[in-house]
Amino acid sequence: MASLPQPVPSYAIASTAALALLFALSILLAARARSSTRSFEEYIAGRRNIGPVVTGCALSASWLSGWATLGMMGITYTFGWSGIWFAGVWTIMGIMTALYVAGPKITEFVAEHNVRTVPEIVGARFSSKGLQSLAAVVMIIFLLMYSVGQFKAGATAWYAVTGLPPIYCLLLTALICITYIVLGGYTGTQWALALQGAFIGLACLALGLSALSYVGGPLGLNAKLAEESPALLQLVRTDLPSVGKLELFTSWVGISATLPLFIAMALGFPHNIARFLGARKMTKRDYSLAALTVFLIAGPPIFLNAITGLAARAAFGPSLLKIVPWKGDLAAPYIAMVSGGEPLTALYLAGLFAASLSTLSAMVITMASSVARDLVQIWRPETPSTKLVNLVKISTIVFVLIPLYWTLVRPPELLAIFMGYAAIGLGGAFLPAAVISLYWRRATKAGAAASLLYSFIATIALGMLVQTKAVGMGVMIYSVIGGSLAIYTIVSLLTAKPRALEA
Image (cartoon, rainbow, N blue to C red; front, side, top):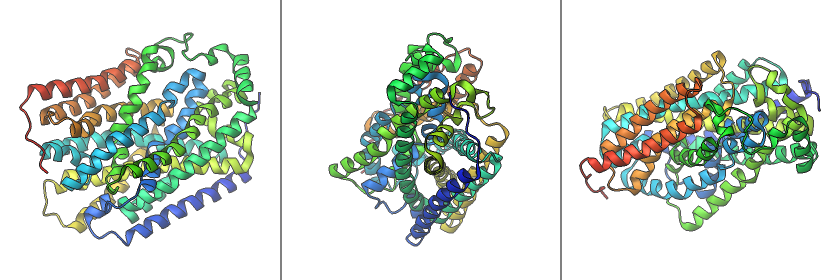
């Protein structure tokens, strides 16, 4: 069993250099986009001229958050092979569903109705200002929860490499995120996301292969896991109780729930489907090119993330579980340090920050734009464009600082579990209201409102029950997402038939 690596100056120097290069390029892309932004509408949604490769890279980056590049390694490290279900074995299915199901309808609807935000999709679909503002409030609350995970991901890696307090890493992340969002708006963020998405795929691929080689390949990996505990090889951990969060790893109820969760997440994440708001109208060839881009970034490299966590368990045993508050989330940076030295550590750390920063920035621009568009401009259309742009910039700072403070005061124990709560709520709320509504003409305003409210209330209530182990997390997933779809359907069928969508 390998001893835990210790932070040394060479790791910090190499990692800082890689991060500086990545951040500098992101800011340059944002500055380049600024010159082409001429109005508030273009600032929050671009000029709808972004092509398939950039859209595919940005979609991958917004999807592959700190969950994918740090949290999923922590899950498989902690639970062994049974963790691959919740860690993200369904990742590629979810994101491809978003590309082919949400993408075409959203780009078409956006062009026809001049939509600039995700809540505005809901509002325009049902001709309701109140529903649009309700969607914005629900979205902002859940996205703030999900944002906490991005800060914890960056802080964990920085601690592993340097041993320094996480406040330095958190403040740097916040500063860079605020800079390129405020500077470049939606278009600048989209281009920065594209750069970061490509970097994420490269980093995850390199780390996964290096970690697997370090423990002796597939056979060596499983041999070392079996030596510690045969239970680590089980796809279902029957040795653990099926309660609370553990249900995701110990019961087929929890394991089967991970597939609908990832599909609902991909289709219902507002910061995810917002990547289509600035895309040009794409042909079948364009979608094929975007799909290839997504697969290269979110396919084999991300599957290897789960293997990375297993390799760390094979290398270090359960020793990381004793390091509070980081625990299993230290798996990836530590295995990078021992398997690849400074070059791999620097590449991975930059890739992790790219993932965390890209998802954080995608969420922040989505929230900030929504405040100006869905909570202010919709009710006061006479508000000058300059004031709305300034409101987006101010909101950007607020929405970065809130999760930063939350992470410092009370960091979540296991990153992926905490982010899972917000993911369940977002999937249940926006899958029916923002995506299915574009396909189902019989849907009504009452049905959409009911699904939004139900998802919000059920996520909070059931999340508390999961924490007390009164309910399993698999049951929570089925109850929130399945319940939201059922309520959306039933209420829509019971209420008045909506008017046909205007051309």
